[in-house]
Length: 95
Image 1 (cartoon, rainbow, N blue to C red):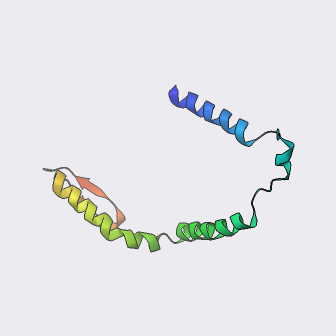
Image 2: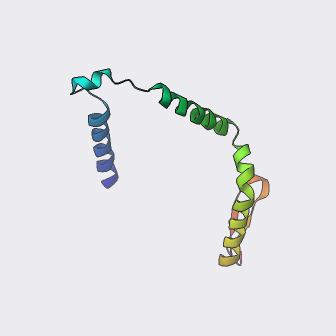
Image 3: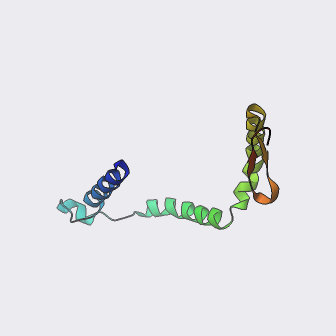
C-alpha cells in the first residue's frame, strides 16, 4: 500500500511541477537550454552512449579491484565464489 501511495504522490508532484501552464509571464521567455548548458551536456551524452555501447572499456578497468573485494568477502565469510564463463556462483561452506 505504501509503494502504491508513494507512486501516486510522486506522479502527482511531477505533474504539478513539470507540466501545466506557466504562472508567471517572465518565465515565458526563458529558453530550455543555453549554449553553455548544451556545451556541457554534449560530452556527457556522448560518454554515456559510448559506455552504453562499449561497457568493456570500463569493466576491464574495474575488474581487478572487484575480484579483490570478492576474494576478501570469500575469505571473511567462508563462501567461495567461482567465475566460470561470466557467471557468478556462490557456494556455502560444506556444499
